[in-house]
Image 1 (cartoon, rainbow, N blue to C red):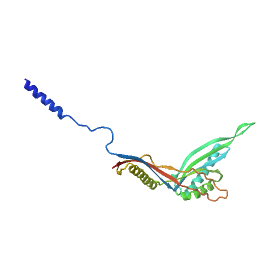
Image 2 (cartoon, rainbow, N blue to C red; image 1 turned 90 degrees about the vertical axis):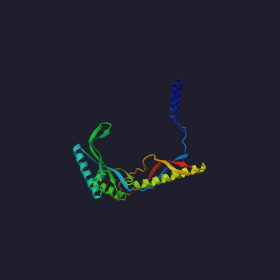
Image 3 (cartoon, rainbow, N blue to C red; image 1 turned 180 degrees about the vertical axis):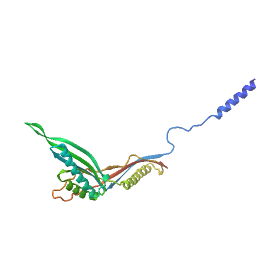
Image 4 (cartoon, rainbow, N blue to C red; image 1 turned 45 degrees about the horizontal axis):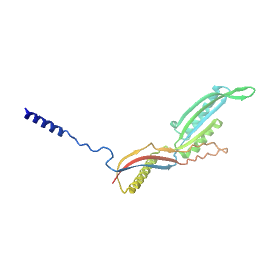
Length: 237
């Protein structure tokens, strides 16, 4: 009976030994590395212009005011199309008819008529033709047209984004190399790269009005900055 117990105990002990595992120490990363953020910015001349215009009409009746504004809007659309602006680039942004008042101390607010307004957002794909397009619109609508502002922008920014990404990588690598040198190490392979955000653009908001001498207005396009930020982790050796 004692011999059986000894054999059983030995088998249990052997099984326990066979199920032991050795786990590596947890905590700090085993490979030295450096993580830096790089920013790439390039300046680009806008290739397109978005501008905001409206037509307005004042009449003693709301229906008459709306009809006059609609005729002026039709003239504006025709002028835009004659300048090569596609229908998809002409977007109605507002249509309103409302009473207009005149205030005096003795009579208070008195309705003097009804004002109808229709507003548009227009995209000009060829920035260099913006002045001529705006001139045609103002001539077509005469006194009923108002130009509310323009925004030059980049319609095809893929090349600029690639250039900004290349600049961001160069900036990150320069920073990482500097840290590695200070630490007495050298850069190894790239462990990870993350683009922190979508490319950002900065641009001016400009206004424009027709000159008194009816000359074509000059649209100053300036430059836009395309900026990209990345975070890169390099191994150190």
